[in-house]
Image (cartoon, rainbow, N blue to C red; front, side):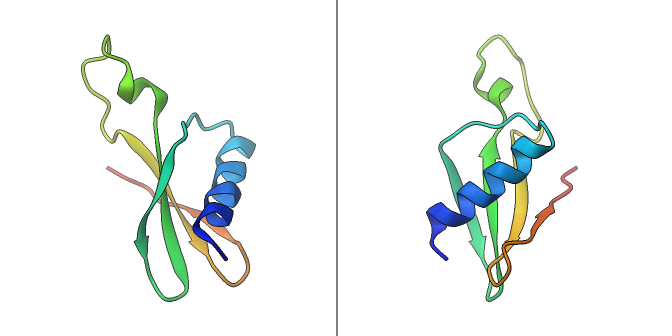
Length: 74
């Protein structure tokens, strides 16, 4: 599976739950069986907003079956 395929699957997951995100996105971390995809939250780039913490949403994508798992950030 390519990085672009992973990002498309992850983006479809976020869209299915109506979670706001923007492109471009990136693969943050790669492990043997899964990759971490990160998408910037739209308001994080808005200069009128003081701070968004965390500034992105992240998911794990299992390479073998395309399963997506939400990463809870604090």
